[in-house]
Image (tube, rainbow, N blue to C red; front, side, top):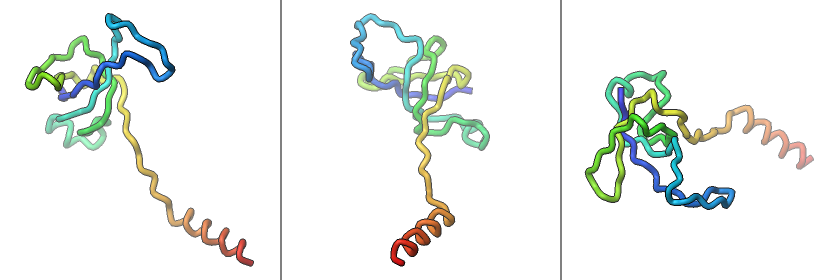
Length: 108
């Protein structure tokens, strides 16, 4: 099983301010999942979804050159090291009722 990933732009400086040389080889790179196979899409237990940001090992990735400004890779799912996904936290009814009780007590 493979997925299509658009590679993120190279960073010459880390968040901590360390400047990386141009020839620095970083074995794992990040990118955004552009497309997944139907088999992966149908499997609800599979952790990768379309548009997820992933960290992957590019050693077995196949570069695809459709557009010069977009570097795409076909990557085996076994080479995906991590998935970064934001989870929106929705307040539960208990939290809302606790919040209302706190306001009622403050009014008294």
